[in-house]
Picture (cartoon, rainbow, N blue to C red):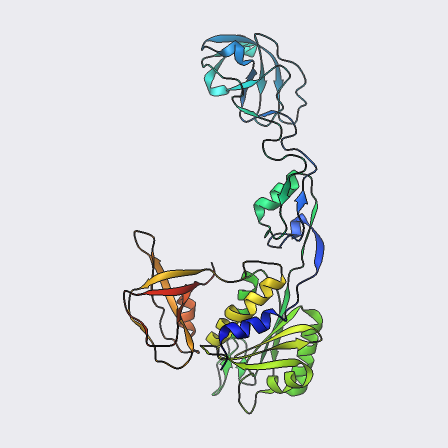
Length: 401
C-alpha cells in the first residue's frame, strides 16, 4: 500500500491545467480569472447623492430652520447641470449627480415642503459632504478590480460590469465524463433480480462534480464487454477534459475496465493506505486524465473527494483545492483497529454554545452503506491506531463546505 499523500502527488503532477479562454461575464460565474483586470474607469464618475432629499450649500444650513428656494429637480439619470446658488436647493433622487454649487444633501425626512414645493424648510444642521458619494470613492482608473486567481462570484461580476467590462479571461471549466460499468448494475425503479444492484455511483458523482464547479457529462452505463467499454472510454475522452469510471479497478477476475485501460492508456494501479477507497487507478489516455474509482458506492465518492476533486480543481485554476479541515471534539468513541491505513469515518457535526465543532458517527461505516454518507457532514480522519476516545480532538474534513 502507498500513502495517500504519494497517490495525490502522483495525480496532481499529471493533470494538466485547463487552457485560458475569454468568456462573457454572464458565463464566468465560478470560473477562475487568469489575468488582473484593470479598470479604465473611475466609479463613481461624478459626485452623486447617496439618498433622496435636497442638494444644498452647507453654509446655508449650518443651523436648523433654514428656508431655501427649490430651483430644480434632479432625477437619477439626469445630467444635473443646473447650479445651486446661495439660499437655494435642488430636489434630488438617490444616485443623481450633485449639481454645481451644492456640497451636501439633507435627507427628505428632515425637510418640509413650503409653497407647493417651491421652497423647503430644513429642520437639521447639515455639514459639508453629508450624503455625497465622491468621485472615485469606489474605483479609480488604473485600479486592479479583480486579481488573477480570483474565483469569480456574483460580486466580482457586478464589479466588472460596473467598470464597463463585458468579458473576462478565465481557466476553461473542466468537463468531466462519468461512466459506470458492470453487468450487475441496472437503472430505474423496476424490481431487482437476484444479483442485481442499482447504479447509484454515476448519479452521485455527477452531482458531486457539479457542486465542485465542474461541467459534468453523463456517459451512461456500459455492460461488462471489453469492446463496449473501450468504445465508451474513447468516446468519453474525446468529448471531455477528464474521465471518471466507477468499478472494475480492483483485483477481481471480471474487472474489464482494468483490462481495457491497461491496454489503451498509461495507467498506474494503486492500493492506497486508506479506508474506504483503497483501490484506485489513474492514468492518461491521449493526454486526458482517467480516474478509475472503486465500485463500492462510499469508496467511489470518498476516492473522488480525496484524489479526483483536488486535481480537477487545480486544473480549473483554483488555488484552494481541498475541502476545509477543522478540529472537532468527539462526542462518542470513534474506535478502529490498527491496519496500516488512515480511516475516513463518516460523521455528523454540530456546534456548541462556543461554536466549537462536535462530531458523532453518522452510522454504519461499511463501504456499501450509503445511509451514513448521506447523513454525514464530514469525514473524521483517524490515523492508524485504536481511534479516538470520547472527549478527544479529531480532525474533520467538511463536506459540501
